[in-house]
Image 1 (cartoon, helix red, strand yellow):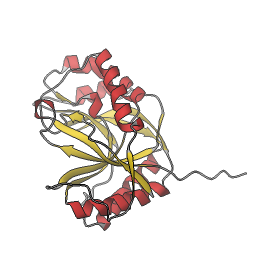
Image 2 (image 1 turned 180 degrees about the horizontal axis):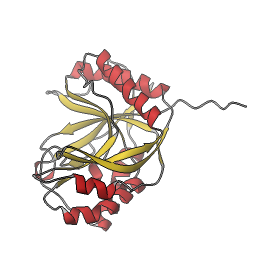
Image 3 (image 1 turned 90 degrees about the vertical axis):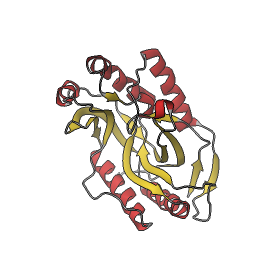
Image 4 (image 1 turned 45 degrees about the vertical axis):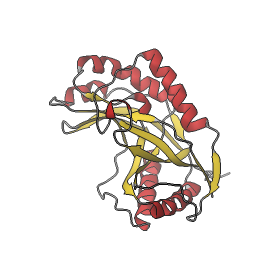
Length: 247
C-alpha cells in the first residue's frame, strides 16, 4: 500500500484556541483554492506503508484522521455563515480553511506508534470505497460547539470511522468510545446560546461531493496566527476499493 507524506502544509484553525477571525468572500475563495492545492493536488514524495519508515521528530505529535470537503462545499458553507458571523461576533468562529470532517482524534502520538498507524490506516483505505457526502443541517453540543451536519452515505461514513478507530486501538492508541457523529466544527460558544444559530442553519444543504482520500493530520496548538492551531497533512491515502456492479 502506497501513501504520500506532505511537505509542511499550513492550515490555521482556531477550533481549539484563539480569537474569532473574519474572512471576506474573495479571500475565502482564494484561500480555498490554496487549500485544495495544498491538500488535494500537491506533488508529494511517496513512501511505502511500512512501520520501518520514521519521520524525524523529537516530541509526540498531536494527530487526527479526517476527510476533506472540496473547495466548492466549503465556499457554500462559508456563504451560509456570513449572516451568522455578523449576528454573533463574540462567538469563536473557525476559519473556512480549517474545516474538515474528523473520523478519529488520536491525541499525542509517539514516533514508533505513528509508523504503525501509517501501516494500519493504509490497510483501511485499501478496503474502503469513495463516499458520497454533502454538508447539510446543523446542531450544537450544549452551548460549547456549533457544528454543520453531514448527509449522504452516512452508513459507509460510520463504518469508515469505526474501522479507523479500531485500527488505532490495535496500535495501543486510546480512542473515545462514544458513538461517532460526523460534523464540521463552525464555532465555539463564548457565554452565548448557540441554539438560535443552529436553527438558522438547519435548512441549509450544500452540493454533493465524493470523499476520495483518507488523511492523517497533525494539529500544532498555538503554532498558527494569533496562537491558533495549525493543521498539516502527515500522510494521505486514496480510498481504493471499487464497488462491484451486478449485471
